[in-house]
Amino acid sequence: MADELQVKESVIRLTQGDIFGLPVEAIVYYARPDLVLGSGFGGAIAARGGPKIQEELKKLGTVQTTEAVVTSGGNLEARYIIHAVGPRFQEENLEEKLRSTMLNALRRAEENGVQSLAFPAMGVGFYGIPPEVCARETLGAVKKYLENPTGLREIIFCLIDSRELKPFQDQIKKLP
View 1 (tube, rainbow, N blue to C red):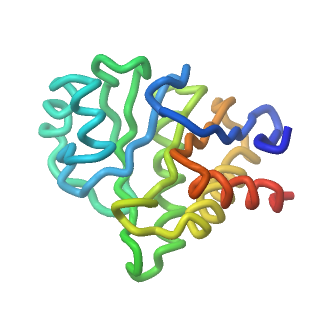
View 2: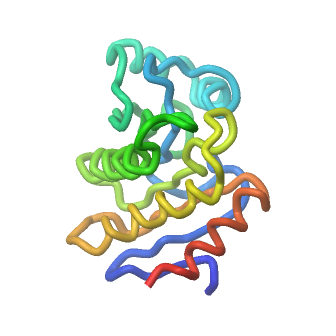
């Protein structure tokens, strides 16, 4: 299938739609450093997941760029939410920081025994990371991570629309 890539015992899949409807153990959220669930995706997490998630985040304080923390999924189908604080567009060392953010999110997933994980287009939208840059750096980081021994078996990139999906489709074809 053109929208997936087998990497050793794991698979990377691309899909378009609602990340909250995916049958995965964890979803990743591109979080703010203060871990406040704001508008957009954060607002949807707060509304669908309930107040427990923000309560858990308040106990964690602030997080530095590239770091990731884990909370429960509250009322969501996913058991966990990995809150990954990534770089903003035109920030120095953007690509390197985006790759580090991805690796930290993957590590937090493994620390919690997660086998299936869904990412949005990290930083695309509000934080202004171009979809092409996001696709190249995030898919590359995940593929490299899966080439080593891991308990992760399924990584899904859930993309909102064709503007996000196409660069990921183009990039996944380029991965060796």
